[in-house]
Amino acid sequence: MKITDQNTKKLFSQAYILGGSPCSGKSTIAERLSNTFKIPYYKVDDHERDHSKRSDPNRHPIMHNYQKMSWNEIWMRSVSFQVKEEFEYYRERFEMVVQDLGKYDPNKPILLEGAAYLPELLEENHANSKRVIFLVPTKEFQLQHYSQRPWIKHILQECEDQEKAFENWMMRDHLFGKEILQQAKQRNYKTIVVDGKRDLDEEFENIKAYFGLT
Figure 1 (cartoon, one colour):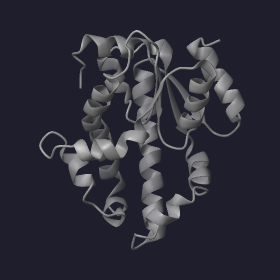
Figure 2: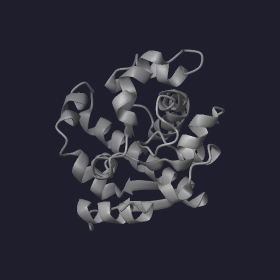
Figure 3: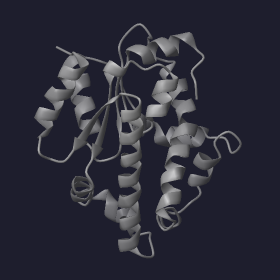
Figure 4: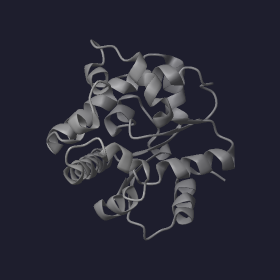
């Protein structure tokens, strides 16, 4: 989706953007950047429920249908289909992200974070490549840290085969991340593969330096 509003175009051109796949430390680093440098922070995940309510069955068929599905229905489908669907989901949702960003002052920097910022969408809307980073965890790092999240078990309890559901979920996110890395590199966006060899403090300093924040 290309942005037509000039103010939003301006906002995207000077925004600091952390994209990528889940479990890569995006949110933790974004919160720290926002607090340290007093930059407004728009976290896509915080608006998921609102975006779902605003979805229209004709304009956003995947988002609309997703609301009606159980966790068992979601995770027990083929992984390849889930990956394709995830990209389409974020393409549909980007319209609502853009609408939300219209509330911010386009003359001031903003920090944007979330998996919804696909490389293709940022390129279409002229995001500044020097202010865009994609973080993607290795499969091993993702599995290790996802397993530690307590809310995971509540989701899996709704699935007929919890082990298979978790396996599909992790593979979906892994393949999504691989595609994100490929898309980002093709467009000359900076990428970081998170494998745990650097701690969050090191990653924060690395990203801060790339963004030129002092």
